[in-house]
Length: 316
Image 1 (cartoon, rainbow, N blue to C red):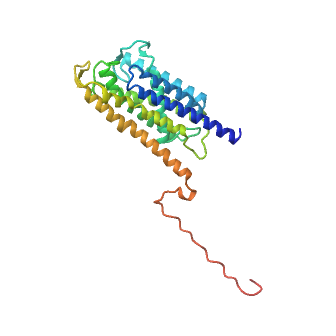
Image 2: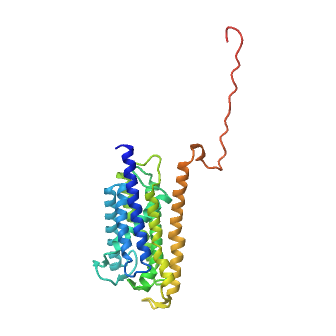
Image 3: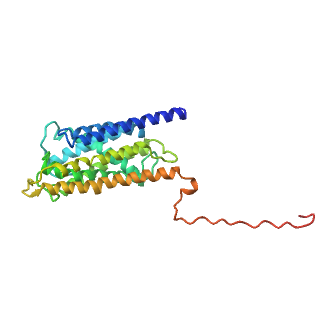
């Protein structure tokens, strides 16, 4: 495949990702004025995962991410509902469940999980064939924390206020127990680790030198756009007391404000850091080779050897 064809194909893929990103961001904005459509942007993000992941890692890798994400998340969700491990004791209140878990939980894990994965690859390092063990393990750890940050902002509103799921014994974080967030980090780490191990064995070869594409920025934008929900809750929702199943009373205004704070200083911080890393690499890629080194590094000293002294006569 010639370089011109490759460039045209890359431009088309970038255009598709930007159009899809614009549509999803618009959808998140629409949730602020139209009720009952909150799941549509999340489902659309699954489409983004499929396209972005396939173009970045290949179709088989996308299948591994989706399979690992669905199987591990749904298995551990159902296990926790029955036994309390790893999230704690809770149950869902809606219909349309797979065993004990609603259908939309799997897409939620996949959509935001993939965006958190991309953010982790930018902040730390991407995983490719023959990556070091530090990268293979470290990137899933960073991705798991980036994903759990979303749940920190989401869970108290979704459970204690909206009661889409119920924590049967309450919890110290506005009715949510610590075990929930530990369980989230553990679950997300597991399916990201499976994906990372696949990439290390069968993923694409590393680019030389690695470059950041516009697809990276679209993923970061979508990760940041997820916080629109918390802005909307803080600005528009009614304030008042709410009681969790343990009998503890909380103020909804405090929950909305705390959720927004966590979204800003958690998710938006991750997004800002990833954006700065992309911008930094773009600047480095466009700078002359001699200017890509750290400006604080002392320049190398060049020693000029003295010219040999030529002797006079025939033996010279």
